[in-house]
Length: 405
Ligand SMILES: *Cc1c(COP(=O)(O)O)cnc(C)c1O
Image (cartoon, rainbow, N blue to C red):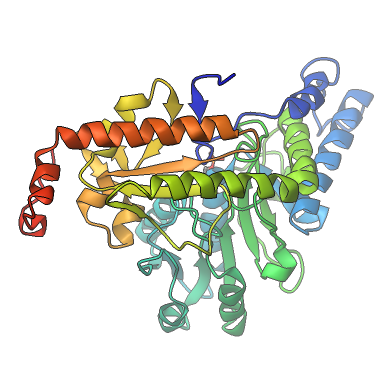
């Protein structure tokens, strides 16, 4: 039996795995100790649990335990990486290279650093969402201290050429930071093979609890340090003070261990469902896939349905299907997604996009229902759309101004 509503917004957050919750529960009640309490068994039990979690998190990304700094999530990790590197290395140079389709946590941290004297280059992306390596190399200067490029994009799922970027960074003796929130636990990520120096990721995107994440900070070749952005008791090797979220870390660790075991099998199923969804939706007239078709995550698809407003489309079925559209509601207006705009999409296509994020529990029934609902709704909305009628009458719509509202 199909159970509604269907959740296909797994890039925003994922449902916690029941096995993860079961592991966490004792750490809210009988094992409630502070992991920094060194004088009694309550503290020791908590510390053992935290170190086990650290090992599981490190193992998933091929890191050493000591290279994992626990945070409250990827937003904090992104901030700690960018601000912490800038503060630690600014005597060597003030230039940072990033890219226009990064998550807001990266872009806004960069904006903040610009106010403090940093110079930031925001690389454009190609029409498929990939960074151009030649442009990246041209942007490098003697003052460049950091390259910050995300592993995989949260809106279109495109995976950047991480190893090649790392090689460029190494060649020029620059640190390489990657926001890998969408990649870790979804595809194989290995900080050694990938050549990443600093990497942020988050528990709640991989079926773990919200409010916990990690920053990987490399300890050799090179040894990297970041200046703490939260001062206090000197937890996490002095890079992030604050009482550790023991239950959260236990859950994050378990989620990582499960991903390590199950990711490959899960992906075989997920990618089939995604491809089925995509092939059926792309049969709809004037529908377009956004982003590179090959270099991307197995569970993501971003499609524009021309002559239909994404928000209107969502309203057609959002009681039954949870999805994101390419329009972000800001206070005054509907702004088209900056990521889709960066791919060169016009406002019309950016506004008419939907982002599908599948999960390990997505079923064939859910996908079939989604295909049916979207196909029907697109058809219905186009029947009422003057633009669609004009398009069908052969009017060249590119000559018409698209108005914001
Ligand atoms: C979700 C996400 C974040 C933010 O992570 P939180 O743990 O929710 O703070 C950052 N970057 C990317 C790419 C994301 O997908």
